[in-house]
Length: 200
Image (cartoon, rainbow, N blue to C red):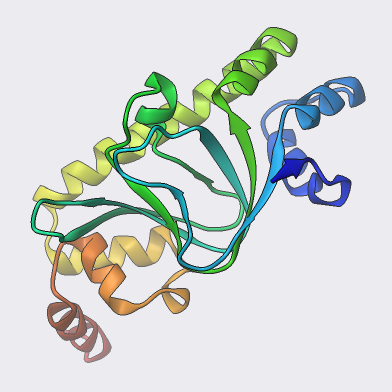
């Protein structure tokens, strides 16, 4: 892990520029408070039970966020690909043990913000506090909507929503992970996909 590599900064700055305008000086401050990290496939960014030290912006690759229950069953709640954020946000904010693990499905590059660095950024660039607050708010809304979908939509409707939400991801991840995300078996997912192909 090391501080920002100049050529790696552009995707983050481009993403932020969609929401707020930063001066060159502010960009410099922001990037001085970030680290670049490359993870290999199957490595963990955070493991359940540990404190989540970083909020991560994905430059390349793919991660899954999941909870492991007492029976050793994975419950995937989110995938993250390029230009998405990933972490156990509750653990990151409260600095308490994580309820979720974040694991890399592919070799993954991220820009990381530590808890202390985020606080420094808020002090030095106040407009970024609003920016990060909006990210957290969107994550909260998405989480609540996912809970509602889980008990109001059929498995088929949830799968169709998954395809709409993650249009670029289905070919990149194993079917059993999609099934875990939907809360169904791999076999039932295959049945749903067959029904869709047949127009049922």
